[in-house]
Amino acid sequence: MSPFAYARPSTLAAAVASGARHRSDGQREPGADFFAGGTDMVQLMREHLRTPGEVLDITALPGLDRIEAGEAGLRIGALVRMSDAAAHPIVRERYAAASEALLASASAQVRNLATVGGNLLQRTRCGYFRDPGAPCNKRVPGSGCPAIAGQNRLHAVLGVSDQCIATYAGDFANALVALDAELLIAGEGGERRIPVAALHRPPGDTPWIETQLEPGELITAILLPARPDSWRSHYLKVRDRASFEWALASAAVALDLVDGVVRDARVAVAGVATTPWRLPGVETALRGRTISPAVAREAGALAGEGAVTHGRNVYKVELIRRTVARAIEECAA
Ligand SMILES: Cc1cc2nc3c(=O)[nH]c(=O)nc-3n(C[C@H](O)[C@H](O)[C@H](O)COP(=O)(O)OP(=O)(O)OC[C@H]3O[C@@H](n4cnc5c(N)ncnc54)[C@H](O)[C@@H]3O)c2cc1C
Image 1 (cartoon, rainbow, N blue to C red):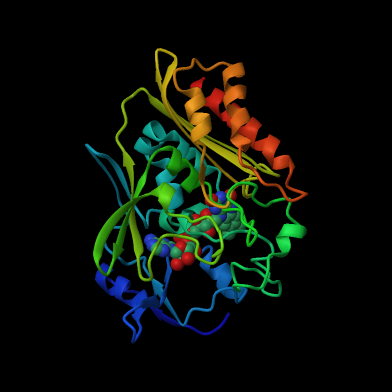
Image 2: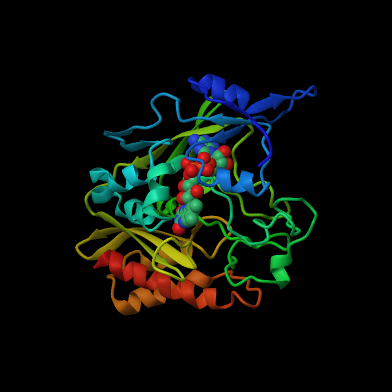
């Protein structure tokens, strides 16, 4: 690990100010790196994939470790540990997909340390990105993407570009997209609010720019909207082994079911895409229908629309169709 300075600010303003530097031309560039649970950061720093000059431990920031219920819904502070969010009674009861996604992530030990904010911003598990000796457009712009013609069994088929096919690895963001959640973000200019669905950017021509966050911006909370009782949700994850493993494919399904008929639906997938990936075609196919195995299969068949495969990951197209169909059936059951 390279040497670094360490600070533990006690105010949001101090953290945000240190997270960006002002250049002489007036532009801002990244400053100190935020550090929450450290479960991804330490791995990246040990491998010299990230070499911050200064690390800002944000765990002393006040008020970000609380879950608060109100009329508008639930507010989960960014520093809430994954295990605490998963076990919260309102999360389990009203936002089941979020609890299920968290419990399907990592291990109990990691979940006890890792925060929900850090989870959303974990970096890809692409083996080339994680190998400091390999070229990678995400890490070293312009160096190439060996995954395109190489070991790509775990790579994305949705949202890919000719610069990068790395999969977004997280589970929780996928559930939050299906649940229509938003993020509160603090920056030097104050606070702003964006849908979770807008946080991550597909690679396009700039795979090294992964999110919409500006230098110094900090996620302070996740907002889950209040929903009528007719809404239910479910998270289904398919992986090589039953625990301590990232998704080959996963589906988050939220259904507004009235008298057995789907009034509204939101469906998102992960493990197969470069960002948490919403499936509007599947949602449209579900609206107004009564869920049966045939209807779930018919809607699930649309999940692979737009997929681009690269040899070893061709199986993911059929896998995501079946994963979505099963998640729809299980959600409605
Ligand atoms: C063995 C192993 C298995 C795993 N399996 C899974 C899995 O199956 N599914 C899954 O989803 N995840 C999995 N993970 C990833 C794990 O969930 C993440 O490492 C963890 O959630 C990151 O949270 P953290 O608080 O430790 O973040 P950190 O490591 O502290 O930070 C991660 C990133 O987020 C930034 N950051 C942190 N908090 C904020 C904030 N509030 N605002 C702005 N930036 C912030 C940091 O600067 C850094 O870039 C696994 C991890 C390990 C080690």
